[in-house]
Image (cartoon, rainbow, N blue to C red; front, side, top):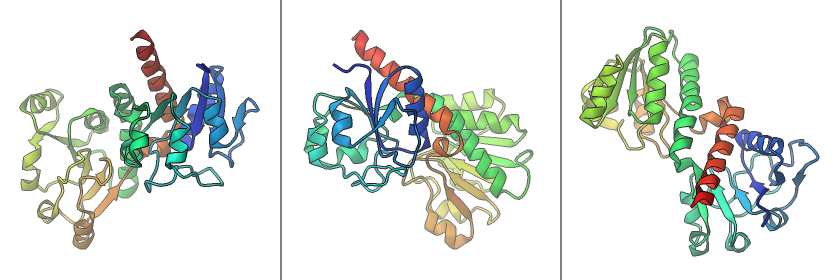
Length: 289
């Protein structure tokens, strides 16, 4: 059943790298939404109906859609509407996507499809944390008027991204404080040589030059931001809507940057390879079952 056939529908530079990697592996590829890109002749540019008909695996981008209506396809000339008509063509297909929430909200037909969200896969999260962390530090180096070396940095959250980010900052000789909710994470933070703080206590502190938020909750609300210096820079890495009250930050004169999809901007080739590896391993696990 076309087990080596893939339809790639939309996406940014990460998906371009994914397509090129799949082609190197000998996959048969039908792509949609890449009219502005020149591919190898083996890669077939076509419409959604033909791509889906000829493929078993369907890969949507990360994010699938930005407005909840149209496919995220910045390199396409025509807009593809994510409607029930398209969903009906996806029955009996294995569908991969990133950030599936908006896709599943499109209607009951979409909920019945075999959709696998690769962005929620732990392997993906771990691998993706490094290019995200590097991208965040790149922003800090551009926006902060002094060196990251020696700066007082707060990393809010000690998940995969928080761990990668704090390690890179520590290696750059920044003064790193990391927040966590659990006492066992606090112990882990301190054993790595960083300063620690409970996430609930962030609102009681303010002595930071650069703040990196990785927590998808409103940690930096108006009350917390009012204690921060106007010279502090906040880089929000949490998924939308993020963890920062951007309106209040603007009123207070605090530079707050919402930094989404960093791997696709700073390391698209690496990000595309990560997506491919994750999907391959998901398929292997499914086959074992």
